Length: 170
Image (cartoon, rainbow, N blue to C red):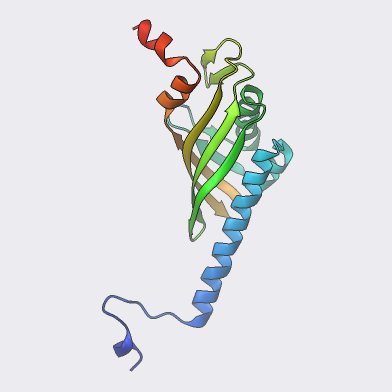
């Protein structure tokens, strides 16, 4: 039997299943690449077109945002604070319709920076930053439905030159 030839713990698959899985992997990684390109172009319209109308986004330390307008407003805030912001993916892994991306975020803080209701800088610091970040994005029917982003907030504050002032105030 064909099952007898499988290594212990392996599951039988057919060629159709493998081809469908490979096609889905290509599709979600292509969507993720288009999203990254839209972010690097600071193209809020393209970002919005890639999203499901009910997209939910979460960044630790912030209230989740719901809907395309709120999600694009988040990105607009980032682009205003870092007009040269770029994302450089270092690792992209897909499983089903979920994509994990590890990237380097670079930019110069040339505008006020706020995170939710917390203003971090009243103006710009003119500091150049390079942060490691990770995202877990979920795609359904060719649209982004969920995005969770993680980065080291203390490292951002340190690179902006704000960490010593915060510690001195404690």
